[in-house]
Image (cartoon, rainbow, N blue to C red; front, side, top):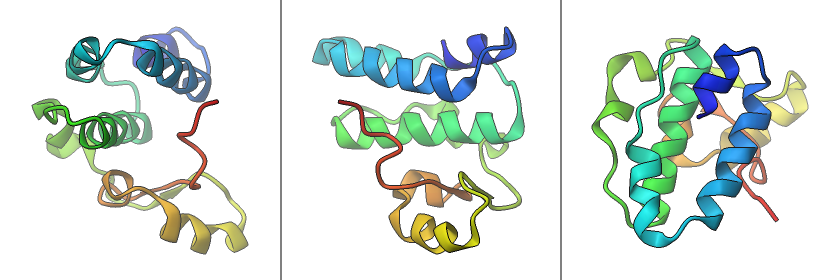
Length: 115
């Protein structure tokens, strides 16, 4: 869903927010299928981000972590920060969920929160 939209030219960040909304509305028994659905590759950061997201959601919702999210191509070789601001980088290092940090992705604490 997210990768397909990104490949079609849409913002992957907007697609992630929509996915989180759909995940939040899904019945508990439907959530495993949402994280199990392996996205097609679309870019290095996006591939790692979606793997981190799947692992994060699986952990926090007592789901089985999908095997696709631990493939080597789902980990970055260089760190990536959601913000270019040096002042926010230290905060992102501290606040990023473990599934993101271990892949070299650093995001803010509220990035995955949806109302």
